[in-house]
Structure formats: structure tokens, C-alpha cells
Image (cartoon, rainbow, N blue to C red):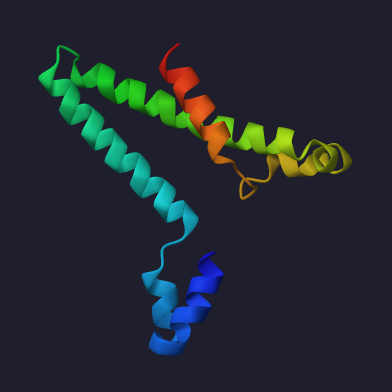
Length: 110
């Protein structure tokens, strides 16, 4: 989707400016995780949950979400993964949102 937006806005703003203004998927992942972490920690201060435990649970949930997103993607593309097992270690490989939800919630509630 990002390349299409850059192509569309590139006619108005120029390709370099449009590429700068439209964030990458990785940037959006990081921003979303930071916003959720800040909101969760602030809300935990109101309840009896300590900031230390809130931060720890956020970090574990984020790691679980990232791992779940990658594992779910590899399971969705199992035939391609079995043909080329080298993609398992590709750190820039695909992810899925459902895997992130399942992994994050699963680790968070353990």
C-alpha cells in the first residue's frame, strides 16, 4: 500500500517528499507498540499494579506478538517454507496481524 500512496502523492509533492511523509510498516509497528505501552503503564499507575510489572508485561507481550506474527506467517505459507526453509531466519520476512494478536495475548495472559 505504501508504494501506491507514494506514487499517488509523488505527482503532487515529489517522490522524495512523499516517501519521507508516509511511514513504513516497521515505523508504524514501533509507534503502535510505544503508544500502547505508554497508555498501559499510565493506566496501571491508577490501579494497584506496579510500574515495574506493567513494563515487564508489556515487553513480554510485544516479544510474544512479534514471534506470533512471524510464526503464524510461516504456518500460513507452509508449502513455501518447506520448499525453502531459509526464509525462517529471514528477519525482514512477512508477518500477520492475527499471529501478533494471538502471540501477544497468549504471552500476556500466561
